[in-house]
Length: 541
Image 1 (cartoon, rainbow, N blue to C red):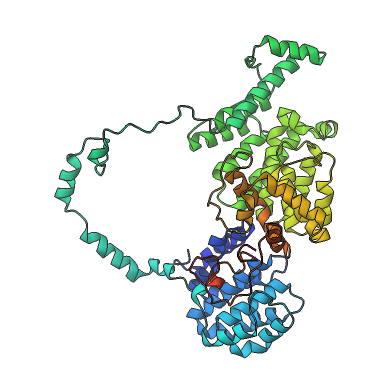
Image 2: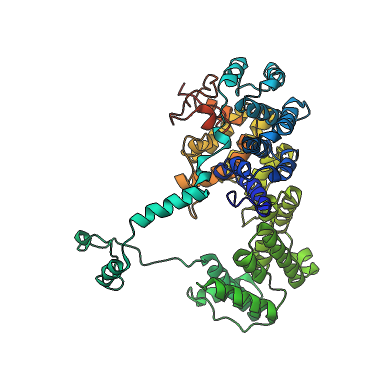
């Protein structure tokens, strides 16, 4: 889209910048400045809106400031206005220190010596501790570094580069007759490039069992059928229910006939989740809505399968919530609050509410998302969906420690020993008490549950691009999932990762020049590798 360069792509790129920040995807966020630099001045009003949004996180804002600076590389006439704005952010004592510090870094990268007084004042005030000092300012004037603002890969889409690739590929192309003869010599279904020597090898053993794509929905359908059967038989006591279940010898009872339009539509949705063809799933969801407009799961599936933007998904999930509220009715909510999930008919509604809250968080609607999580815990205090983990990590990310502490001490979850819960409990103690013995004991307890977690929190190991679907307790995969959830809160808590290193017996390394080799051993410059990503670097004490 940066190569296309039209104004129509700018809102999508702004959304990518915001979502990349919300999901801590540095790979996307750090490419955005050079992309906007290629688009040019028409992007400036849109980027400026993000850069001066004080409700946004500092890291998002400095990437927007960097994007503004990148525009000046191709349009020097914009330099005075752009760098005056950036210098204004660096000098503004009402701004948060991180935003000021990294605005100063941008001035250094571009060698803007006219703003030296601003940078000196930042150093003298301590805002720049750990980022640069007086000596690095002087070195920067002699060696501006623009590499982060103009990435070479964008040239891949230049017309000349495209023409060169086409010419190079044309040299290797077979004449048409020769290509047809080559294809005709291979049996249908065989790979023409397959190595003949490997034909006698034993095929790799694979398990015959492939779990259903929507195994949970299959289990839920069984629960739904069982609950309907028990309800129809009008048992009077738990003993009667248990006796009946024992008589079934583990077999799911034959489903009862649907009692109303909603049950017909919901059964259709259970069928839809099991279809392999997404077009078939969508068609069945639309049919379910035609049967019963109160079928919340139909809207859930349409959000999952057809929404092309976060905003479209939000609208589908809102419709699902309204449908679920109509189907369950206000009296049901009053009578069954606190144990919703135990009644299968509530689950489409609860699914919709959970998905909606996460979409709202991505859209920046923090308070509304938090409100949904709190209401879900009220409706289902046992929290079968794990909503408490979402709420805990997000409260920590926002620095709302008193609210987080109250959640952590809730009698329903006080004994929770989930990894995210233990890690956030330790962080909350550190935020309130500093490096106290209680906080350290909590942290050691959390780290004792997974030996791999600290490496992912400190950046010693890189997480894969995609999160694992399943994990075992104490595994690498569990550490990856936990770090993905809790790291934003740890990164936004001053000195928290330094404290973690101290508890592990690691020392914080000495201050390094921004252009010196990174001590992690990558061979890259410190500022292009670990600066700003890992708060403390150094060897074992």
